[in-house]
Length: 112
Length: 111
Image (cartoon, rainbow over all chains, first blue to last red; front, side, top):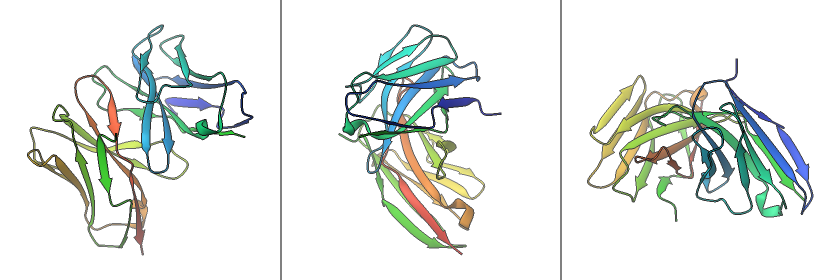
């Protein structure tokens, strides 16, 4: 049974649109992460959190907000989507050592 | 700037050959180096990892060679199989639970 799930799996929106990507983990992990994956760049960290109500800024945070409502749930918000945010988004979780991150299946977002 | 660099961008080997994937880094504070394997349509998954106190780590057909002085490491996949065809990411971490990923190497193993 998948321990990190993401929804939706695919999303198409228009420039200026509002998008929320959802992630849930059942690993009982404190750490959760949002990445974007683009060809030539690998995975780049957007935001991460070490518990409900906590938020840390990653390497590419501009244009993204995130919220961690519970230990299980982490959301990524794009309030004014732009075509540059077209990407494959991954959520991951890890224990407090952080050495193994468990990834979800990804959400492909297209901004027209 | 990219803190972790990988080469080549893509690699094709024949079944049974050894595939060699390269990685380098800049930050001397990095002390943990995992390699992740990603199949199409899936998220990455941890394959093998090494700490900077070691110079070699083996797990079956997969071996990491680590050179701390040169800030380089490589993943060797012995007796490559078509099922090893995937994208491989080198990553690095220091103390703060943040992984820095390279841009990946797409490996194709031809039967």
